[in-house]
Image 1 (cartoon, rainbow, N blue to C red):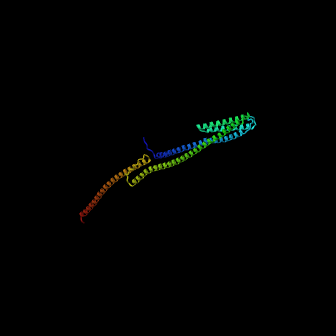
Image 2: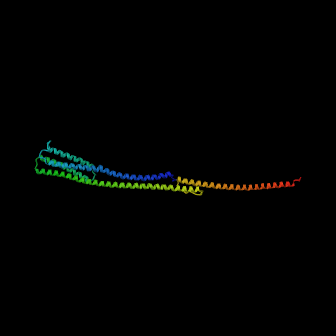
Length: 318
């Protein structure tokens, strides 16, 4: 299997690693921020409405407590007769209790399904029932003109139920506010950790990208430097210089091309030197032949001169 990678593939691989690293950082940061949003949504959609419902219940408990006191002070008139003060106060008390039940239902919807909240809601329901029963009993007692002491006992029970209802709700509000404050601290601490983690990962990512860039630059620079130095040696005439590039990419191919070129230049130079030597040998032969011919010509000229002189000497005298 051939694992040779081009420069483009190597660069893309490096960029892919950097992208994967940053994607991991982004994913982790998003997950942490999702956790922060989840806690924030829980506070906004659960804790805050729950505390709001408790405050409404506390206000209604104060109204009921005031209505109970007013109801207990009403004279012995019939609460069943329409238009009487007792009848009006009774309906106001029942309306307040209905509002209390509605807000208790809201709290129940938003409350955690634990034993503490169940017991609290049960106590609220029992106190509501107790207030209604005490109010009805007082009306009946006043209609029947019972003894003041008996009516006073019922009125005291009515006031105690109203006070206990308010006290119970106030205690639960304190617990809810404490839990909400603690959750706010937890969210703040979680956000601080998330921001610190994001900053740390961003710094690590930048350092990773920088180191990756330096490694890539050094990787290619070292091989290009080898090619440049080899090219300088070849230009100076050192055709025996061999470029050693171990990378199986374009730079490695270029190094191989340089080596092939150097071998061809060396072969061409060797062939040229051989041809020059042959030419020099031929020139030497030509020079020797030329010298021989020149010598012959000189001898011929001397011979001709001697023949001419002999002819002159042997010619008959006049």
